[in-house]
Length: 261
Image 1 (spheres, rainbow, N blue to C red):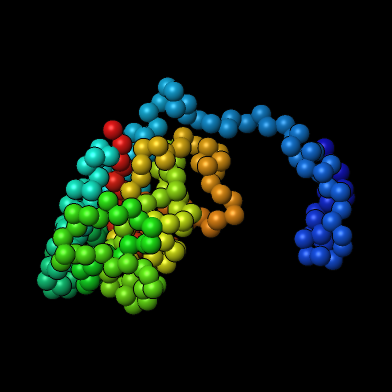
Image 2: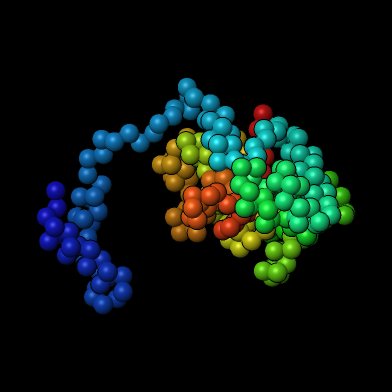
């Protein structure tokens, strides 16, 4: 075990080298000592050979109140059209229901057990178009009708335009079965962070081969130099009197299309 004083000296030496204050010291010994640390803890909880991690991901994501649909890869494009058409129809519905606490409380988008969220939130955002990031596979959107044609985020849509959108459609980098978490690394097809935080509805496509069993497996698939956004269900908070309110820090509705045979 490294003595506290030695560990401190190694940390400070790394900081000085990184900031250019001193020449880079020989720190290979520190790297070797870190690699040699005993790690007797369980690194994986689910063996893909004996556990259907795709089913587990679907179950855990649904526990977070995400809408999860299993679709074959060949049926992905029609499923996207169906989901977007239903969302666009909800967006075009009369906004008067937003002022009706009973109608709003019965809305499938408002949380049924959250009277504050149901009362204060409209059935859907006022827009009818869907934001899509650059690099989204073209075949996913070939059958989308013209009346709900996607709005490309190039040049970047303004915050007001994102707020008025009926939702956003993206892919993902990886998903975690153990926690039901979706990870975006904002590479092509996933877009910048604002694109998936401002709209009220997020439709995300997860391929079955993108599902990792556990967090270590997921992290091993990611580029540590990229930014990462972890999504576990729709945005929600219970900060005030432990009352759950959805849609405060991100989309109120998360719809997952889990594609794979």
